[in-house]
Amino acid sequence: MGDELVFDDLVAYRGQALFTPVNATVKAGSLVAIVGPNGVGKTSLLSAVIGRGIRYTGRVLFNGQALDGLSTRELARAVSFVGQDSFAPNELFVHDVIGVGAQAGGRQSTAHQVQDALQRLSITHLAKRRYARLSGGERQLVQVARLLAQNSPVMLLDEPVSALDLKHQLRVMQVLGELTRAGRIVMVTMHDLTQAVRWASEVALMVPGRVVFGSPQDILVPSHIRSVYGVSAETFHSPSGTPVINPLRVACPTALDFSSTPTQ
Image (cartoon, rainbow, N blue to C red; front, side, top):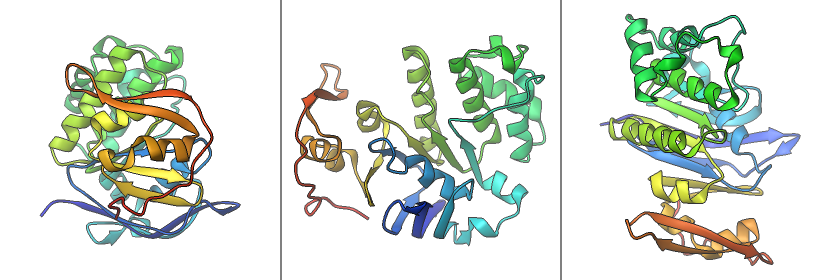
């Protein structure tokens, strides 16, 4: 039996409740793409999982144990997090930043973990650079490398490819896919629906007041995209078989109907 992350009546608040209680189970080997319009609470949902900077009710349990009952050390060994605002002291070198992740994960050989993370993201050339002198995209890659070095069974990433070029977007998503195939639970917020339908095994679509879980094929369909985003879109497969969602034009939103969509 593999790891499980269970949402038990979880609600995040930003003044008022952002969504109705979330009840869902995410199993080992899942890559969950959290998608939805700006401002619906995607970052807040991830923050509530780790109890970070957000008011929330309900619980999140990892293998039956509530995360908010864990010590800081225990939580770091169970869950790793990369936010949009992740930072590090200016004087640190890149290998030191990644080493923080390895140490948080309780690793004995931090040097090995750091080197492995650098190699997996093809950024070994950054190891001896000062973090403060990196570009925004380079910092994003270093923070993902820190998460890899932490090597926790649950990995949460908030828009991890937003500042990356195409090559590094692809590399990060490939690595996240490798992690899920190795049994990790990965949850990642994103705006690129083609990335979501290509890489995710499950989608959490957030709309004002609600979170709907389901397969990408069931959730990311043109009718739902029009209802949620107010955009007409077409879906097709490229000649290589890669699924593509192509936004066509801004359109009047239609009524939202998930009645025929299998959800948790």
